[in-house]
Structure formats: C-alpha cells, structure tokens
Length: 235
View 1 (tube, rainbow, N blue to C red):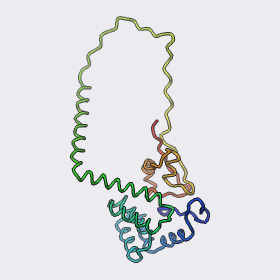
View 2: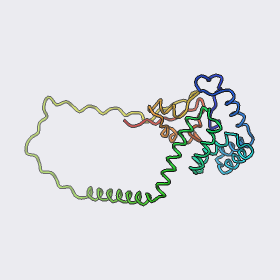
View 3: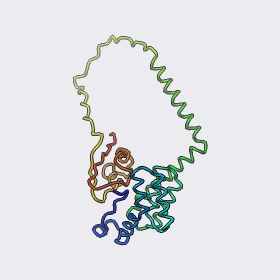
View 4: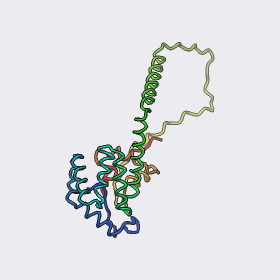
C-alpha cells in the first residue's frame, strides 16, 4: 500500500474532517505517472531515482502536493537533509492545509527540527566534549574493574549466634515476569500515534516503529489487518 492510507471521506466525514474534494485531489495526484514512478522507486529502495521522479513531477506542476510529501520523507529518513525535509513538509501543508495527515506531519517536522539542532550542536564544538565524556566513562569503568579484581579480605567469623525472630515473615515470592511485548492488529483509522496512546498513554510511537521496521517503510506505512509487535516498557 501507499505510505498514507486515505479512508473514504464520505464514510468518516464527521470524524476525520476531510472532504470529498480533498480525497479526490489526493487520489488523482497519486495516479500521476511521475508520482507513481517515484513511489515504485521507493518500493525498490532506489531513493535517488525516486527523488528525481518527484522533482520532475513538481517541475511540471508546482501546485501538486503529493511529491512534496514524498521528498520530505526521503530527506528525513533515507537521504538525510533536514533543512530540505522541513521545507518539503511545510510546502505540503501549505498546499493541503485541510489534510487529515496534518497532525502526523507536524510531529515529523518537530522531530526533524530536533535532529537538525542536534547536528548543529555536534558540529559547533560539542563533539569534543562528548568524546571527553566518553573517555571519562571508559576510565571510570576500568577503575571499577581494577577494584573488583583485588583480592577480598575475609570477614571475621561471628561469635554470636543469630536467631530468626518467630514473627519474621518469609520473603515474598518474586513477581512473575511481565510480557516484553504484545501483538496488535491494525484497524481502519489507526496511526502509530493512536496506537502508542492506546498502549503507552502518550504519543511516542518510536519504540513501535523501531520494532516493526522490517515490515514498515515509514511511520505512516500502515494497512488494515497488518500485525504489529508492541514492545512493552519495563515496570
């Protein structure tokens, strides 16, 4: 399936807020020959050719929104160029302000901005400080290892017999192991954000996406009936 699943807007108009014209325009753009060609290259993991096809689509029709979104995804995840990714995400929202994907795309823009800030921080001289911190951690670990390797002095034997009070209670049995993951089947209208809120109580879906990268091309690559592994946090 395509990266974003578009439900029938007439059936869920009151819930999704989309309209027939928006859905029709999205569907028409996905059938554009250059867009279809670019998405085929994406399926084949040939991101350079996909990039070229989407840019050609924009050159022929700058008002067509879909290729902007596809380019934003390429520069976000596959050929990192965070400045370009932010531009293409925002350009898509300018052309499709009423899209039902607006919330998801806004989240992606925030993540790209954070990644860009982290890159700038490392390039501005913080890299050396990070290296020094790692060196200190290695030295600390080596010191602990040396201390652990020293022969232990035996403790003096106790001469007083210790008794267990009659009122003492046995130690409680260890709690059974919690399951480390659950399995979830995608239903209509699901996004990774909704699924994360269902299992974690917040919108951080990164653990779910990382656990299912082998079957997902991107965080929005969901289809009805798809089975996802949901990592459960340790308690």
